[in-house]
Image (cartoon, rainbow, N blue to C red):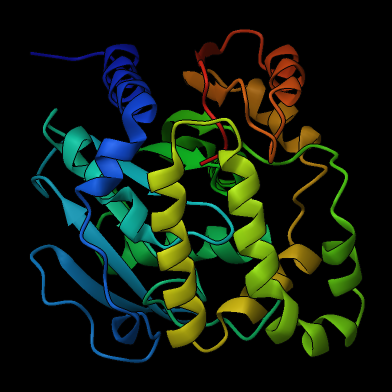
Length: 306
């Protein structure tokens, strides 16, 4: 029996939208991995469906959920600082709807190697291309779900390879003008960032997580995120440098032209945004909706960027 792309997209959207409001319970089910396992060049977890392949700029770690023979495939793409451990429960839930689901670590995050090159959007698009080819999954059209910077990566992939993308789900995507905090702007200066990064970045990143939890019911999630952040910093050499390179090289704040081009494509697009998001402010959703007027839109009431 044939199933339309629209109905398949609806299944993905429902899975993601239902998961987001109960994010604390989701993450409480994810086992925390000790710091000594979060090193890019150490042995990988011995878990079903996990592995690593050599891609153009180093090793890429991945997790697969569901039947590899499934006709439809979902790829989950995380944000600037998040390893794929965050996506485990999302992936399990979506795979129960008959999808093959792929999650992976961006270069310099989690178990993937640091890419000693500019961490821009094309680097991360090429990582997906390499990964799908290495896993012999490049023949499948993909339903992309991208959060924050991951939304930009997904949109850029769709812009370059429109025929390979079945649908897009953008969760509070980056790509719009934003006032960067002074410490971040200072760190982006040549040589300055490399010097101050080890001393100031960890505390700044934790304070940013605390800010996201102000007035929210997600403090448990924020504490979990802090644990993962500390593990990444302690065990993955090059993690902070990768984030700095991303801020310097990635087009995080002016992606409207890409979104406009992608909006002309015929594929389904769904936008999900928390109305209390302060990292990618909820007001930006109005801009994206005006660019993509035919997209579906879901507001997560009380949802922050976490």
